[in-house]
Structure formats: C-alpha cells, structure tokens
Length: 112
Length: 110
View 1 (tube, chains in turn yellow, red):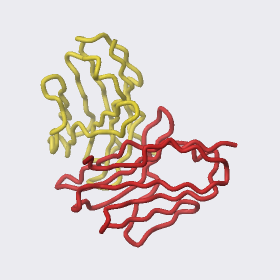
View 2 (cartoon, chains in turn red, blue):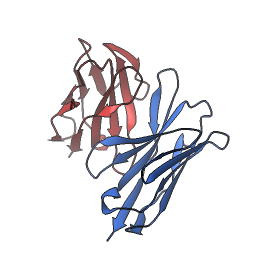
View 3 (tube, helix red, strand yellow):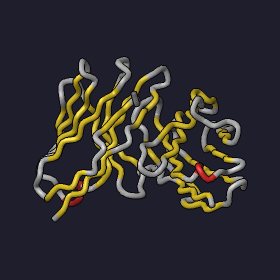
View 4 (cartoon, helix red, strand yellow):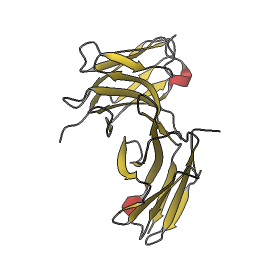
C-alpha cells in the first residue's frame, strides 16, 4: 500500500536554529498539504500545493516559514529561525485532487 | 466562534458501552464532513465520511444535520481498540480546505 513518507521522524533543535522537513507524497497525488498539530489540538493547515503551485498559504507564518515543491513531487518545509512555540507535530498529507487526504507519520519537532 | 467545535472530553467508558461524540461547525457553506481517528503519537486516519442521510459502518454511525450545523458519531459496543482521539473534520472553500476540531479523547477500559 502506497504511503506518504516524511523525514526526519523526530527533530530536536535549539531556538534560533534552522530546521527542514521533507515529504514525499503518494505517487500521482497532485495535491500536497503541510499541517502543524500542537499537542491537544487538531491539525492546522499551513500550506497547500497543487502540483508545484501554492494554492493556500494564508496560515503560514511567512516571516520564518517557507515551503516549496519545486518539481511538483516531493516538498520541503523550512523554519528559520525556530522558536519555542514551533514545537509541534508537522504532518504532510497528499490527495489525488481534492478527495481523501492521506497523512504521513509526521515529524515531531522539539525546540529547546 | 471556532470553525469546528467538539465535545472537550476526555471520555472514559467500559468495554461494551455506547459512546457519542458531538461536533458543531460555523460555516454553513461547508461541503463535506468527516470523522478521523488519531492514535497516540500517530497520524490522523479517515474513519468515515458523514452524509446528510446518516451512514453506518459496523459499530459506527455518523449523522449530519445541516440545518443545525451539527455532526455526531456514535460508537456501539466499544472495544479496547477504539481508544483514540476522534477528530471532527469539515471541508469547504474554493480549495476544499480541511478544518479540524480539537479532537475528543476516548479511553475504553477493560
């Protein structure tokens, strides 16, 4: 069964450092999403791609966060500089169009 | 008002119990509705879609009331393996964005 891959699974960093997360969606899925899930909350959409284009980044803190999907396949989410409040689970999901989203295992970020 | 609000929980029930989760949403133009399940430290997974006519999948029954902007999930004959967080999810907008509730934690005890 095809799955969304994410790496790393866990990341510990100090505040003011840069971190990057990688996501490889299910093959053929044109739509890719990055979510942030703070402990005790539901996932919140950060950015949505359709192929290589951003279609929604209204909740992305653009002063420190950036996301790209250069070839319309895998994607990278970067935080620079990391802050204590960025500690969370970062989830990637993909879907064939606007149908069911399939989530990856997530990257758990701890900022010290 | 939050876009999607759920029972705060947590719910602790014995095996075999029936448990119901409630959810309300604020955007009357929302298009689709779902329940996702999330195990501890795992990713969310789709449990079931929710239709206006109501739908059932084994021990799980989901209901949608568009007039009241209310969604429910009923679990009958609870199993230990049902222990998880249940997320109410609403899809809408031009980009079919998913909006998640905070989730309700269910623990089924032996």
